[in-house]
Image 1 (cartoon, rainbow, N blue to C red):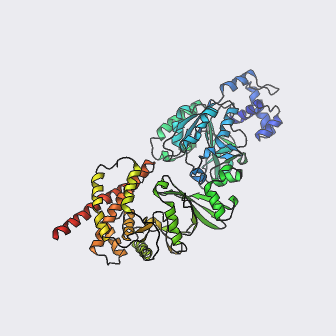
Image 2 (cartoon, rainbow, N blue to C red):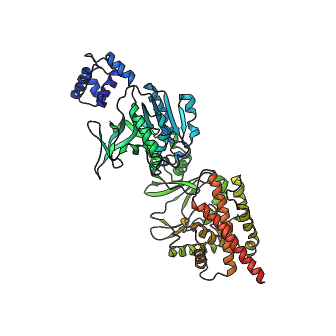
Image 3 (cartoon, rainbow, N blue to C red):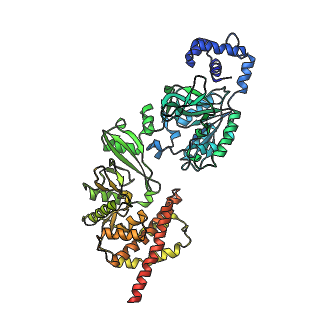
Length: 584
């Protein structure tokens, strides 16, 4: 039975008993409905009174979907800032969580065997087990892979099953008591994001380059044979690292042929809730619109939710998650502290630094900073780029900026205590270091402490986190130094060492950096001290990385590089000092 005939059968089982009412509900012409009814009568599924025959009723029994899979594991980056407090499947529209609406719609057509693949904030979905008797499948790789992997985890339940994302709101129930051929749901909205178009016969054709395709909605029905086939395709796909970065629909693309029939839905029959603004547009009173970050923005900019536009997540930083948005023709950045930052950063001290720097033209313009939770609202620097550690013209300007800071006379009431911070980060990881020779390296770094103290310069305000990424050039080539979370009073030479180890410079590059900062006037003792800072700061950030890794964050070669600085430069300085002592 084809999809159009099934539409007629569905309407008959729903109580639509005339061709005219069926035409109104399906959108088909009256002539087309008459033709389809005649076809069903010839197959003995419908009698002359538009009642199901015994064969028609038996067909319903043998073609009833058995189960459903709901994909709800993803982080939902486009849902920032809501996704800081609630997973997207539990966002409420008109007082009803999206995923509960889907579950109720499935129950309404007799489908109770429902598997939900969860990952991000999985604990928030646990209540559904008791309330709706669903089963949860946990995806531990939700941060690493797209939803192809989630569907792979549910591959045993694909036959006679619906597949649905958790973030779509349907005006009418998209599920049915009767299915036959497998299908994938498209919207009649044309978009550049789709390479497919549904024909009048329900086949799905690949469109030519430059054309617009029918929007892919994300719901599919898989009969028994399609479910078995898809399970095999997923099994093969997860063995390919490139495929793991794809959405599950990619396996339906068989060398330009779409493996399922297409089913069309009107664009105004559903809403995809993929962003803060989409939720606002469908339900302005949703409780999830009023989260902490948005309340801060409303108050700081004297606006309401309607004035906040084009919200976009920024790339996740090492410490924070941020998003930018537009208001009244200007763009802003809202910082939301990341995992574990409450342990790492004293927000009151950060606040004090920004108060001291207030009005300075070479720092970002801050409109709001909360000394308790670290929420920060600042102006977006337009058409900007970060300093490039390989561009020595830019590096020279960065070092000039540091000299300007160090001679500015700014003061705050707290210092950055390097060795205390190393000890603090060690305590946070709560287990021995993963590095086998950590104790020996730590001992060498500790032996550098008297030398550093003996030759430390008078303390000035230092940035501490003098990462090349925190030096930003705007469209007019104006240089800013941003993100003062770790700043405090310290020996200014620590900022030179920090810049070098963040940039992962080798020794010749570090020497060039020192000469650039000191404009060729650096004495040997100061140079050795900066080497010692490189060792101690390398150990500091190595411990920081190990702690963050315990929270599920991995910084790749950066973490190894920091440990190498601790290991190699501690040996270098101690050997040099030993030679000096021998000569004396």
